Image 1 (cartoon, rainbow, N blue to C red):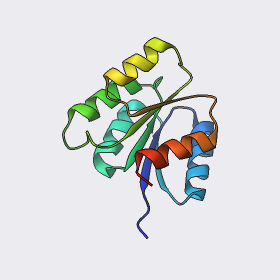
Image 2 (image 1 turned 45 degrees about the horizontal axis):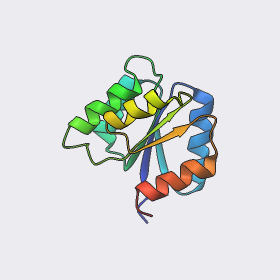
Image 3 (image 1 turned 180 degrees about the vertical axis):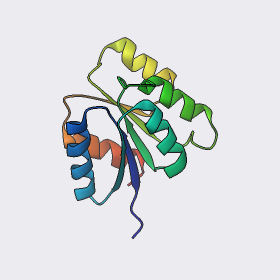
Image 4 (image 1 turned 180 degrees about the horizontal axis):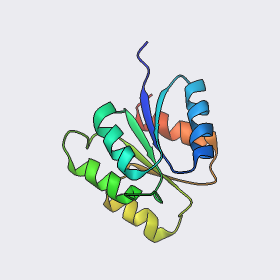
Length: 123
């Protein structure tokens, strides 16, 4: 069985660890990055099936990472879930403008994240 690969980009190691364990338990292959630059590089080299992307990141913020990927035809089809504590209307709108496919706010329900991942991957 081919495991779907998910890239988690978040600078909070505790969150990365929890989400990684949860998704691996649900039979996903998980790769991680702790800043925007590393996230962008891993998105390009690993070609994940979906990206869970924090907004407030060192080096390059999540909006910029998402926008750069969505403007590149090679990566534009990878679904991106923005994953953030910033839940204001303007943040959501900006996420839509850079091409994000979904928006999940922290603190989050693991089941909500999982169902959004399954929805975006057509599972």
